[in-house]
Length: 303
Image (cartoon, rainbow, N blue to C red; front, side, top):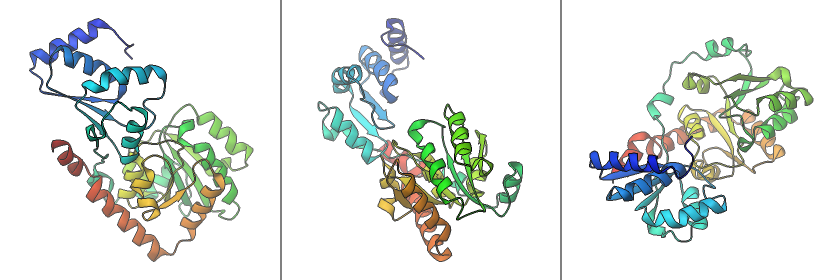
C-alpha cells in the first residue's frame, strides 16, 4: 500500500540492510523492486535480484522509465516462466538477455497429490449432485481470468450434458456479473459460486475437469495444482500455459476468449476414453513432480 518515493521508507530499509549485513536482496514484483533496489544501493548490498511473477509488468510509461534506470542496478531478473522471460526482454530493451533467468514456478506436489480425500463429502457440503460431472475453475473472480467465457461455453454444452455442473472456487469483483450472466443464459441452477475455499486438495479431488480460461497469465499455480491432483485440464493459450501443458500434450489448449473452442474442449474431456484420460493425467502429474515441485525450484534458486 506504499506510494512511490517515500524517502523515510528507503532510509529505514537501507539501515536495516546495513545492520543485518545483507549479502543478497531478493525482491518480489515491481514495487518491492523499486524500493529494494534503491535501498539496496544506498546500503551497498552486493547482489540484488528481482523476481517477476507475471506478464505485462512494464505496462505503462512510468514503469518503463523506472525500469530503465533501476534494472541496470539489478544483478539478475528471475522469471516464473519462459513467456515471462520473453515479456521482460521485449519491453525492457536495456536489459541484457543473460541477466534474465527462467526460474519456473512451483507448488507443494505432495500436498496436492495426496489420495484418500472425501470426494462425496465435498459435493454434499455444497449441494452438488453426487452423480454430476463437475467442470470447475479456481482463482480470483476477475475479467483477466476469462471466467465470463467459461459461463458462455458451459451454457452451450449444458443441453448435451444435462448432468453437468460448473463450479467456481474463489471470490472477487466479477461475482455479480457471473451470476447475472448465468441467469441470462438459463444455467444458474447448475452454476455454483461458493467463494474462497480453504481445502483446495479436497476441491480438486472432487471435480472431473479443471478449466483455466484466462486471457492473461504468467505461470499459473492453480493449473499446476490441478495437474498434481490428477485432474484433466483445459486452459487457454496465453502466457506460460502452453509451457505447462507442453503445447497440448498434457491437457487441452484452447484459443483465449473463445467460448466455442472452450465448449468443444469441455465436451472432449467428458467423452474422452478412460484409458486415454488416465494416460494424460499420469503424464501431467509426473511433469509437475519433476519440473514444478518446490524442491526442484529451490535447487534452481540455490544455483
